Image (cartoon, rainbow, N blue to C red):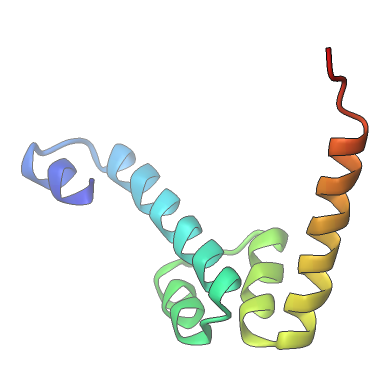
Amino acid sequence: MLYLCNKYNLTSSLVSVYEAKIQNNKLDLAFYEMDSSLAEEVRRRKKKFTWTQWIKFFGSKYKIVNIFLSFGYLCKNLKLNKNAKWN
């Protein structure tokens, strides 16, 4: 997508939106695969992290944080599925 933005000379604000999405997806992938090198690459490219991005960053670097957060996400999803209305 960034290639197409650059090829057709789109505005820099639009390019930055797509680049931010790509960096967020890379951080999610780093958290899922526990790839600390990918998380460090995102940290170098991105200037500021939100608190959820910091949590995912540390979750990709430290196994205990990853296990704790994965368990939290699992409990959250189970709770949401329990409250779903099935018609």
